[in-house]
Amino acid sequence: MGHGARPGSTGPSITVVLGDDVAELRELLRWEIEEEGDMTVVGEAGDGRQVLEVLADKRPDVVLLDLSMPEMDGLEVLEEMRRRALPVRVVVLSGYTQQSMGARAREQGADEYVEKGAPGSVIRDAVRSAARAALA
Image (cartoon, rainbow, N blue to C red; front, side):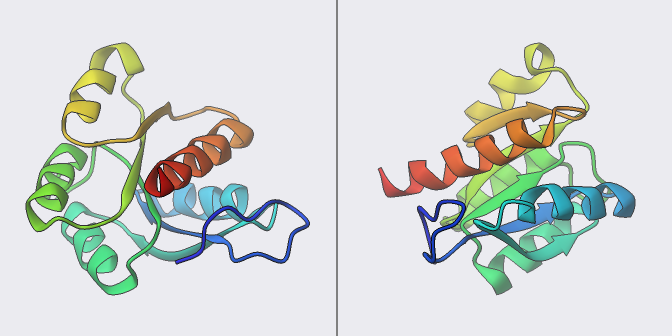
């Protein structure tokens, strides 16, 4: 697992899995995440159960996780990740406001919380921050 690469550096990139039920949003997020070259999307999933499968298979540094998904919602995924002790940092990217769900997501183990519609730079910074937390 690579950490700490900066744009323009030759260091390894942060690996990311995207968990959201909207394929078009995952495509946009992949573009946003990979834009500066220090992060790589290594897997995608469209529902909560798939997220857990991809995390177990890919072992990324960070998962970008939607709260509202079929099969298992993001909070259930967080709970299961904790139960399985998966060593993956979590950035919740949700349509719910931080005020309504941020504290609950953090209680379940989320490292960062970003509302959908945030600029790509905010999303990238949250992923980098979560990856750095893994090193602390």
